[in-house]
Image (cartoon, rainbow, N blue to C red):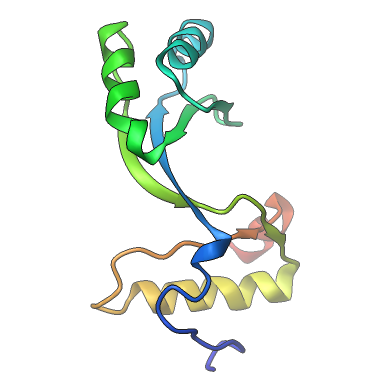
Length: 131
């Protein structure tokens, strides 16, 4: 309630998120070779980020198999993990973004909290104002 919201019970919003495998590559990785090898290995999606890095999305159960196939193809990832992603996001304006970021910081500071996931989409211009 300190940040204008309330906490639900454990798992009460889990339906809003999907468990996926995420294999990350640094900027400068050969995108064509990576895309071909990833799709051949059974990856679900290849995402090129604005900073030039590339993310491979897999089913959570296929993460190790896809990662091993990419390493065998000579494409060593920067990171590989099972994570949670929101299939749809909610765009926030400045006031909502400030409140949400303050809440995330407070949650992450709690000793019992290991990871915090969000479906918030904060536009770059709003983030710049908050920095």
